[in-house]
Image (cartoon, rainbow, N blue to C red; front, side, top):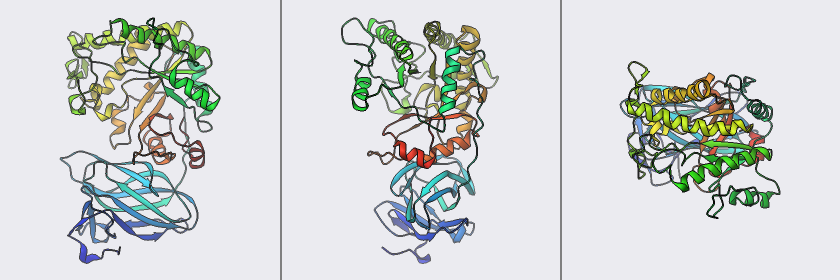
Length: 462
């Protein structure tokens, strides 16, 4: 394997390309040219001459990957910058970032007709000696000129001391205080429940001693799980009036009370099925899942006038479903229970109907929910969680500081095999996107990051 020279430019390469090794010394920035590469596997990339590119050329990644090697004198933390071009007319592209073969997050490349530089990862860890930085195809098809490394400079958080809900319940304030006090010091681990009731024909709520996931973790660790997740999956939509569906929702609410009374923290998602109750589905057709719904927020909300079509059947359906959930949450509030509430999650992925009409429509839907829950129904026991990604337009999907207590990141490692890195790159990116003003959580994940890695890297997921 030898380095490619300028004579190789303009030809198609089959492979993972590897930049020539460079050394980071002191605080000086180091630039690694994408075209200084060697052949490594059977993917295709194209090195293309360009007078506007650094070094006179860039790499069209296409379906290939990039692998850079850099040597550092001491173990430390760095910020990674990427200079690239992605012509308009297509879509933004996300690529996976690996450090020494281990996932460190993702880099989102927005459309740009000219070369521009972005902060690809706010914080990465390089160990003493030679390191490998991989930009691994997720969407591919980015024109990369170079990456650059600079010494990492920490920035502080500035998080409000009260929840965004006005006049929160005593329990909600205590829960928020607990999250805020521990943020940056401890990570609160949890698990999602698959089945909240016993198979006894009576839908009897489970306990720490009987529920499958909770029992397993208690036996393995000697401790009960603090954070327990539930879902209003069957509370609304087609079929929700059936006995099994109602039993599922009732058991979830009863288990949430039980967890709170045991000193734990309940958390609810809402996989919101078609509000028109025509199909028992929350996925969109573009997700590739079946069944799917074609429900559109724009039938209830006018993107031009920025007003809700309050006389439309779709608006009435949305409000009916929201009121049903609010009433369920109020049953918990009456018992003094507070909880983490994570609605409209993963919207930017557009595989759920609440994201398919774009950021503006989704934000309007979230704010309508907040207003109806808090101001109309009087729900004051929630800590509101917004799920983000790391895309260039992530902030466009954000409901706003006054509507969100916690920003969560859902992450499934790539490569998919067991992986336990801290995801410090993603942590720092989310922190930067939202200005360090919110508690940051790893709200959904596959493999679990090792606590020692998180502590060492400063990836202080809540």
